Length: 344
Ligand code: PEP
Ligand code: MN
Image 1 (cartoon, protein in one colour):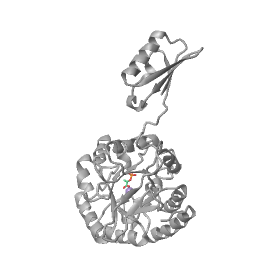
Image 2 (cartoon, protein in one colour):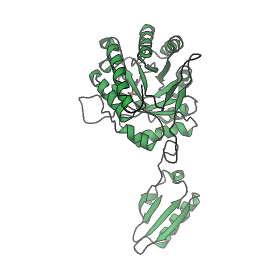
Image 3 (cartoon, helix red, strand yellow):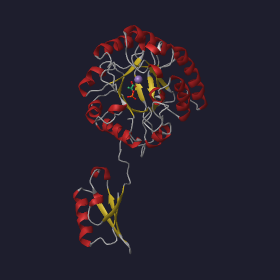
Image 4 (cartoon, helix red, strand yellow):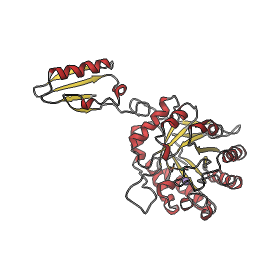
């Protein structure tokens, strides 16, 4: 960290800052120029994140040198994080996220019934999808909207996982449900609306199971990385980042899918990056083109919603792909992935 002092800073003010910084167990290098004095703080400045150094008397500006997210940062790391979901059956293949393969996660927005979940799980697996997505606990804008089947839904998910042999991802909304969800899920999903539910992040940080964090509706990428940092700092190293669109002035889409997030997050971090073009656009006919674009941008995985009868879906029908379109999408994604030396 570099502290630039005001031109008229007094010796007493300089000494006060130097003493304070040393009290934080950081070293200080004082550089006196003809015009002004600059202090260089030596050591991990993140230990004093949040200290309002800029309001100290005599301080003109403060410059951070290190990223505030230490564990999520790509800085000083040569290898990217690969998350391995062990095979569900003897002789089966593991699913690896963050490797050469682009992993497709697909399924209904909500678990609506046992039958529908089974049918969609079989479809996803047959078409080459590796992970079934389906919500049991649903974060709905209105309290009157379908809230999900809860524990009953999780039971269906466990059955499907065992019988169909497909890994599952599902959302956990409440720290009190973390163990219940972790009993079933191969990957726990933190929804956009809970991206900064810090108690929830700490709770899933205690697990030794992968966690996918979705970017909040109005959150910056730095904030997303800091949310990942919460989980990592609790000792859980298997974190996935998910871009799912942000709120902008545009109203013709549900959200604005920020695809620059993909290369940016991959530059800043070693964690795998997933893109959700379903919530990212809100319209089924925009989902496939944006999924293709996400793979082209280098995404490590795609998450999409599907439904055989979107008009009857209990949530998010307008953005659900019909099975036939999902199958077509898989072929298209494979073609795009191959251009980049990857495959779906
Ligand atoms: C979901 O994926 O089921 C979901 C609710 O998404 P988001 O949290 O991104 O809105
Ligand atoms: Mn949804």
